[in-house]
Length: 424
Image 1 (cartoon, rainbow, N blue to C red):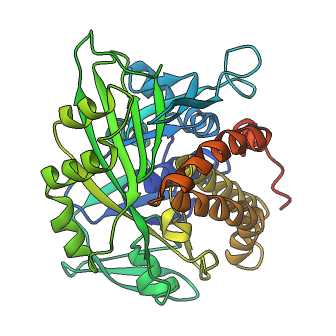
Image 2: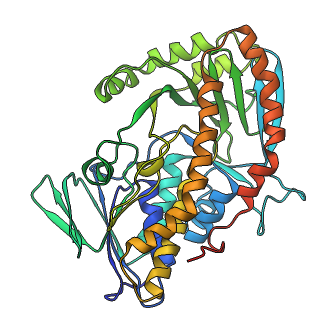
């Protein structure tokens, strides 16, 4: 358990989601000895949200969660389902390719080795919350809406809708794609833009004798979208069903909430798009799902401002992009690399201003994020509606692309940003 320290920085984190909580853990773990920060997390919602779809935690993501103390909790509570390999299918003709996480000896990728884990967002967050609750220097306050951010040479102050306020040495904006930190302070003109695709997801309970076409996780391409089908718990009695597909913009966040609330209409859309699948279990899984949610995928422009002198954006608040298989791992690496840069600045005796640590982090991270952003563009084009010819071309391109990029992906799966030279 990390002891609180009166000598450490006072830090505010806006956002009680996975990015904000792992940032708090990383800032605590990598703080110099005797300099553990006092961290206050403020969340807009009345309570921390433990709902959502299912995510794939790649080897690099699991490595970071292990360092931060959350992975042991996931294992202890039997959260998620280990993935040896991801399978890729054409819903009309069958299996196209595999992407393995098993490594050369079948134990995983990297040293120590990790495979991948398909886990619900809710379970992932519960494990991270449990790890945060073990730290005496971190407090979480829910139901706080920030209406104003003021920054001076000495500190940054948040004003809340309820009339209260809070000040700190550093503000971390981990408040997602529609970040208040970004929109009210860092770069107000950089607003989220709808990508043109949405994610429709639900969970289908299945019987023991229900036959599926995959070992653990499958990406199923169709002419009008991509359907992810995956186990997400050790029992294998439930399948996550998530459709990424081209959906016309409804024009407002309230409009999206209204559309997303109509579960049966979303189910009908999925059946319309994937109902002609030749894989026998596809349609029954869509029909079995107990509920469906529709979430529009918003993005930010590729280049943008991440910080001021005392405020830093991390995760989706800084660089939201379409899902490209590594998004969650990228966020965890953000938190660790930033925390290491900040710790080095403190160890150096806090020369100049905190911006020096910010600049070191951006120098490390900007290129990696730009590359990931370019990769994510392929996702949007791959799941957009296509005719027969376009889809046929896709079935040839996807296996080739997985083969061609294998070494590149494994390079990132192996990397451990807790030890990489930060050159600062």
